[in-house]
Image (cartoon, rainbow, N blue to C red; front, side, top):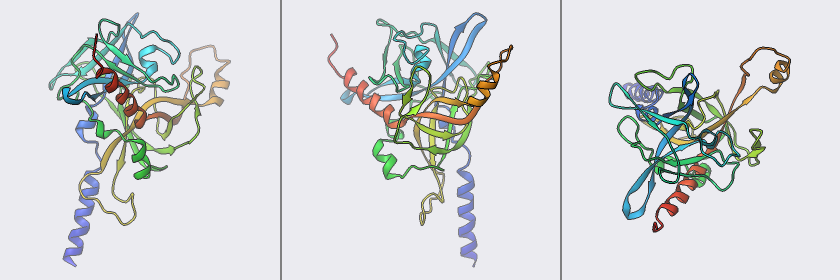
Length: 293
């Protein structure tokens, strides 16, 4: 009997220990700001990845939503007034101009303009202990989605910029939690300039500034029948926050309003799946490995 009670106690401790987000996942979020008349405006989120270069090691790049870098999904001109802010040491931030042009940096986007994704290689330092890059094997592949049977109800979370409070001396990313809501095989209606897109839907709130945030899935205890895990859950990157969905009924009612009113979200967020991020990284590897003139 004592052995049985001890076994249950160990399982309970392991399960409870798995609840908080490990610190290294919170550190993955970098903040993007934009010049505005009254100062810097909180604009979006990004995270760093290591792009393999064969025998030449790797090159660190920033992954974010395409509309964060271009202002929308149809423009071909990168915004010129963006800034990257990351934590430095234990008490401070580093703010660097995130300028992208032919002589300064490189940006790679998918050929399919409906994919809200951009991979940026700025000429700034983007990898250290307080802003680590995400290893490639953390991003789930298409095959792994099927092998791990990712499905509705799985636990998910994301970390990103919280526009009402970003911090002054430090970046303070917000963490939002939810579940996988839908895994459609068809394209989903999205922004007005991108009628349909291949996305996954999560049951969690996302707002302005969350675009580009890394989203994670937690494979914990009780997910698979007959399988018991000890220690913390396995956490993988499932994608990148693209946009939320507004309540169309509220938008219709507010059309007669004379004052500016914040339009409510309906609690569902669309994400660019992680396998599309991996495919873009593979495209970047091929491009960067070519002999340069």
